Length: 360
Image (cartoon, rainbow, N blue to C red; front, side):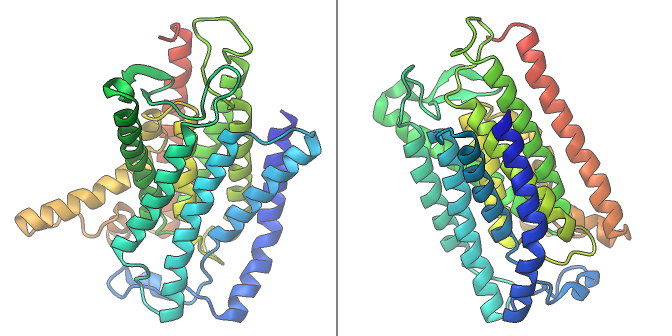
């Protein structure tokens, strides 16, 4: 527990104190957000607000994770390092996208193909490595079994080792791409994605601690969890949660800085990485219910317009629909935070209820 608390506190302090210094640096460089003209007109006042703030979230997370292990004299684990690799790799893709937007003063950075290729490369490396590094109990950071709150009987390796690896890579790519792009689509209003992400990472702190206390390496029970490094995954989640809290102080309305794709892709990657390594893959859909709903609004809008020529929403993603209905930005953010919190509460309830009834 000491490492979890240290990670959360250090990340919070670094995020809280490091963000204003980073804002000054970005202002000196003239790295401001470019605002689309076809979006809500109220957003035009945000033109020039510093972006790429996700770099602070990533930096605070990495620093806090290192400090937590240094002060507790414990080595990092492969599970924790792989989740941080996924966050950092996707954050780098987002940084390239943000930098192109800023340098060329346009709303589009990397082409969609380039962005997806970068995400896929990082996801493939993560998926391949996550099936390596077995511990003394032969548990690897990830499993080829599809999981909900623990591994189910559905094993992607049913067709053989190589086929199972390929299927797992595809499955991991779907999860990582969905989570990272879901957070990216949600990041349209001040503090919305940051606050919702904080709740999801807080839930993974609880899940990691619970799995550690009920680990098959600690207790002999049919309810135990076969997760390789649950305690260290709780540390990672605590670090990201603290970093998001610190950043939210400056990202809340009126935002002094935006996280940009640097932050949204990294946070989505962190959520997907934790889902895969804690064996809660399908539970992620409930935990990130707000991100799922906002992503679905875009899919529905595009599908409807291409097939019927009509729009279901005034504008997608969903938060902009309510803006055009006349809702104040702060009102939308707070209400969406409430929805995000309800999804997280539901997911944690499902997680605990499964343990109560006896596991598999």
